[in-house]
Image (cartoon, rainbow, N blue to C red; front, side, top):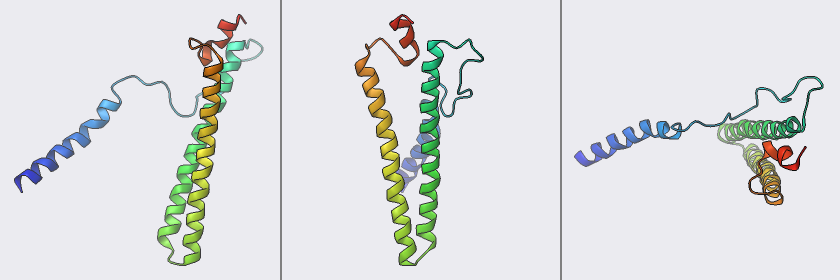
Length: 135
């Protein structure tokens, strides 16, 4: 019994302190970009075009993951709140459709990102493509 309390206390301390280790390093901005179009007026450069493309892709991925989380929650509520077989089948169909859609979106992003990084030199990243191409 004493060991069980110690293990429970140790688990509680680890669960409380674990998130601090995740946030120990400064992370780049996550989520929706604050400004989709990085330039104003006619002073846009090639660098701004690359940043615009990256902002659109990041916003699309963020929205897709957010909507899929909402749909997963809806399907879970539908599955647990209805005992009718038809409604549970509908919930299972929503689960599978959302999972397939999310896999398609994330794998499309992975394919595009892999192709861009493999076709370009290793030292080139999205934000300095124009500089390395001489534009």
